[in-house]
Image (tube, rainbow, N blue to C red; front, side, top):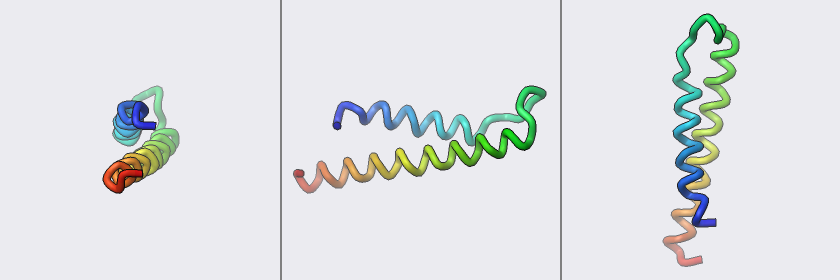
Length: 61
């Protein structure tokens, strides 16, 4: 499970990219809101996974 830590960090960065996606002619306001929600969920989920792995490593399990 430890070898996935960099992948989880990359997913958090992708979540930030989705949350801060600029609106343009291709991305309408409704779709941009959807990307913000999906990006926020990705940041929260993968952040919690990293916290879980950190606590698990500190406790030695």
